[in-house]
Amino acid sequence: FSLTGGSHTSEDLTAINVTLSKADRDELKRLYGLAISVNTTYLSFPVGIVRDMNGNLLVPVDVSSAAKVRVFVPDSTRPKLVFWDMDLDAGNVTMLFDETMDVSTFRVQEMTVQRSANSSESGAFTLTGGNSTVHDGTQISVELTFDDLNEVKRLEEIGTSW
Image 1 (cartoon, rainbow, N blue to C red):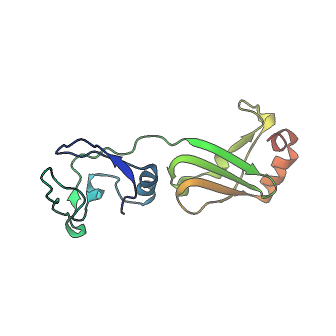
Image 2: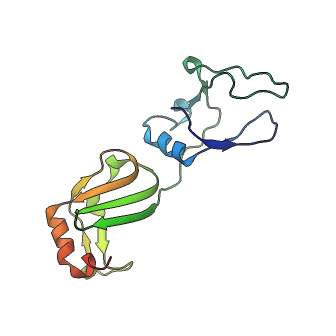
Image 3: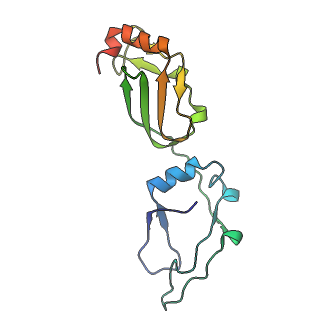
């Protein structure tokens, strides 16, 4: 995987700190088995990536002999829902998260659509199934089952207050 963006320290130092772009962080998380531990995190780069204070080019690190990370801090930040949409005409729900999600762990049967933020059981409906996105990413879409879609539409207090 080649990084596409980010930022780095601008001072003249012997260490350069690179901050990955959000897109690169999301892609690293999507690529199963990459950068999940010390043993799966290596770095390579071509000649010309940076020069020393006298203008000498850094010796490249080839892909075939990449450098293993010395210190690795795993991702421990819990993802958050950014927003979600429901289209009752199309019969789907789309959710956007702040980081890449492992769609194989998604359980649509644990989603409850409610009339309000603190709705009672009479103003809520827990989905029974549906087909979800097949690729990992920051967005998960769910095609509601025929019965769930009709139940949400039937419960007027849920399906008409968007």
